[in-house]
Length: 248
Image 1: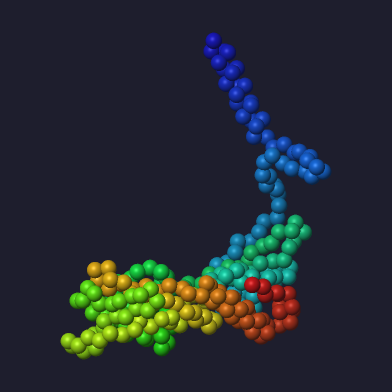
Image 2: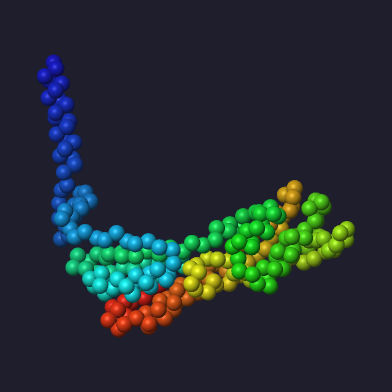
């Protein structure tokens, strides 16, 4: 009985092994494999260097150009990421030599903040301009003691603000506002965008800022990054400049 059980188990194991073996099939003149195959003995790829600035990538190109085994691409993946990659090799694969990821603000758009936190986040994550100053003035002067301190018709908000020690006045909430958050690499101009500034009474005053342009700023940021690299490459020798293409 034990012998029969052993044979049955061996049979099941053999079935499992056969199921794991890849099979090559021809379907309509094309070749397919039943499993994903990884080539053995393929050429090793370098591990990418990682940094957080555009200048670090420029310095690498300038000082380590001898490491390039082919023409290279500066790929502006997004306003927050740039990669230096090779053109296709004989196996039609690419090698990533350098990755730079921007350290940007973590301001939460479309998230309610209490008054104190909102004021801190604005100063830490935005460049100062007239609209930011207006938002800060409005948010900083909302009367905390009046639970009915603003009206809202869905388009325009009117808030009660402190204008003195004991004097209050109604003021229109500025909208839309043009602000400049830190959203891309520090070496390029931060794109400005329009935002909707909202107030809410949640027991205590609460505030949020909502993006109102659908991400148009991303194209502007990518163009600024590309221009940064064009200018940097112009300062380099022709043998380096001629081997690099900028895309984004």
